[in-house]
Amino acid sequence: MNVTDIIKPENIVYQKPRLMNDNHMHYCPGCSHGVVHKLIAEVIDELGIEEKTIGVAPVGCAVFAYNYLDIDWQEAAHGRAPAVATGIKRLNPDKVVFTYQGDGDLAAIGTAETIHACNRGENIVIIFINNAIYGMTGGQMAPTTLINMKTSTCPFGRNEQLNGYPLKISDLLAQLEGTCLVTRQSVHTAPAIKKAKKKLRLAFENSMAGKGTSIVEFVSTCASGWKMTPEASNKWMEQNMFPMYPIGDLKNV
Amino acid sequence: MNKNEGNTIMTEEVELMKGNEAIAHAAVRYGADGYFGYPITPQSEIMETLMELHPWTTTGMVVLQAESEVAAINMVYGGAGCGKRVMTSSSSPGISLKQEGISYIAAGQLPCLLVNVMRGGPGLGTIQPSQADYFQTVKGGGHGDYRLITLAPASVQEMADFVGLGFDLAFKHRTPAMILTDGVIGQMMEKVVLPPHRPRLTEEQIRKESPWASSGKPAGRKRNVITTLELDSAVMEQINIELQNKYKHIEDTEVRYEEIGCEDVDYLIVAFGSCARICQKTVELAHEQGLKIGLFRPITLWPFPSKILNRYADKVKGMISVELNAGQMVEDVKLAVNGKIPVEHFGRLGGIVPDPNEVLEALKTKLRI
Image (tube, rainbow over all chains, first blue to last red; front, top):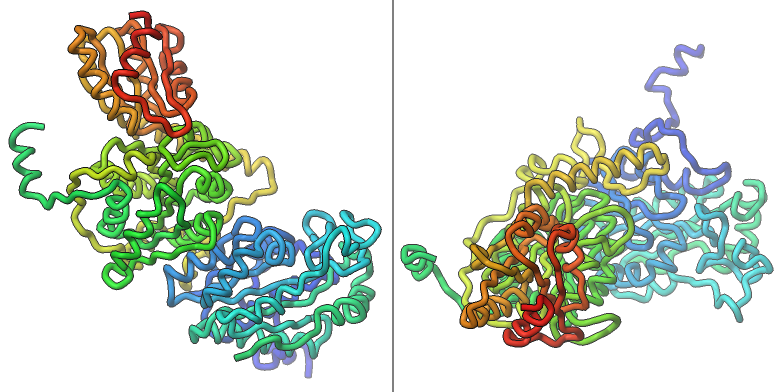
C-alpha cells in the first residue's frame, strides 16, 4: 500500500471531528479540555444534532470553547451557564442545549444555578471539568481542591479549618430528583476516553428524550496549574483525585 | 383628549386593574415569549398575574419562577440570545442583583424588557415607593460603558402601553429597555385599555428579524456566538465605539416627553412617573394662586430630553426637579440647562410621598416666588 492508497477516504481510520474547526487551541499541553471538546464534537456529529445544538460556554479556561466547535454558542457570565441554558431550552424545547463548566464556575460561584437547574430537571446536559484548581486566573484554590493540595491562594496546602472541605458536588446532584444521569469520567487513557464518550452520548440522548438533567463530570488534569508535566499530572490524578472523586456512575436511571 | 377620542375609548374594553397586573396582561397580549422572575414586593403581582393567566396554554409564552434574581436575568440572557422576546421584573434590591446580567445583556447587544418597580432604599430599605434608582438605571448600574433605554410610566395605561413600546425599542436598537416605575404606579388601580392580542413571532420570523440569534446553526450559515469577551484591546475599543455610536443614535431619535401646561409659564416643574402625577395637582393649585407654572414630564429618562429643557431655559425663570429621592434627575436637568437659570430640587425619601400642597410650598420657597 503506497501513500496514495493510504490517504484514500475509504482507508481513513481516524480523523479530526468534522465539527472541530481549525482554530489553534489555547489549552496547555496535558490539559483535559481538548479531549473533552473532541468528544463533544464527535457525539453531536454522530447524533446528527449539530443544527439544533446550542452550547453555553463558561468563564474559566473553557471561555473560548466557542472558538473550537462549529455550532451556535452563548457565553455566560461566571457561574450562570445553567440559568442561561434554562432560558434557551425553555424557549426552544426542541433544541439540544449543553453547558460546559469548570469547578469554580459550577461548584463555587454558580452552585445555586447548578442545583436549581438540576432540581427543576431541566432537559440539558451539564459537562463539568473538575481539575481542582482555577486554571485561567492562574492556579487559585477551587471548591474541589484536595486537602493539603497547594494552590496560589492556599500556598501551604488546603486546610479544612481555614478553607473547608473538597466539595463533591456530583454526589449532591445525584440526590436531586431532577437528574437522570450523574457520572464521573476521565480522559487520561484511551480506554477511559472510550468509556467517557459512551456516557457523554447517553447524556445527550437523555436530553433529547426529555428525561431530565444529565451531568458528566470529567475528573481532569491541569498540568500548568498543578506545576507538573502532563505525564506526572495523569499519575497524580490517579493517585490523589480518583480516591476523592471515584470514576463511575453516581446515578443512571 | 377631544370628544371623538373619548368615544373611541368608550367602545374599547376598559378594565380596572393595578399597574403591575397591566404589565402582565400587556406582555401576554404583545406576544412575549418568556418571563423569568423572582418574587419581591411591590411587584410580585406581575408574576402572580402571569401564572394565573397561564399563557403557556394559550400563546405558548413561558413563565418561570427562578431561584434568584441573578438566575432570572441570566435566563433572560439565554432567551434573548435566541432572538426571543423575553422579560423580567423586580424591585430595587432585586434589580441590584440583576446588574451583572444587565451589563452582559447590553454588551451582548441583546434586546429584552426589564421592569423595576422601585421601593425605598438603600439596603433592604422599605417596600414603600421611591425613585431612588434613577442613577442606577440611567447612569449605568452594572459595570462598563453602557446605557439602558428607560421608560417612566405615569399611569396604569402607560404601564400597559410601555410593554410593547419597550420591546419594540429594544429590538429596533438591539439593546435592553427598562420600564422604571415605582410602588405607586405598580400598586394603584386605574382604568386601562389593554393592547390588542397579537401572535408570538414564528421561528422563521425570528430568524429573519434577528439573524444574529444563537439558536442552532443551520447548514450554510456561520455559527452565531453571543459573547461579551474580547481580550484584544484594539478590538474591544472598536466594540465600545460601536456601542457608543448606537447610544448616540438612540439619543438623537428616541427622546419622549410630555408638556403639561408649559406654554407661557414663568417656572417649570420637572418630574417623572408617580411624582409627575402629584405635580399635575400642584400645577392646578399654583394656577389658583395666579402662579404661572408648567409641568415637564420626561418619559424617556435615558435618552433624557436635554435639548428641549435647554430651550425652556431661555423662556422660564427657574426649574425645580421633584423626585422621590435625595436629588438624582436634578443633575440631568442642571446639565441640560447648563447654568442659564436656577435649578432646584425637592424630594421626599424612604418611601414618603409628598402631597401637592407640600410641593407647591417647597417650590415657592426654593425658587423664591
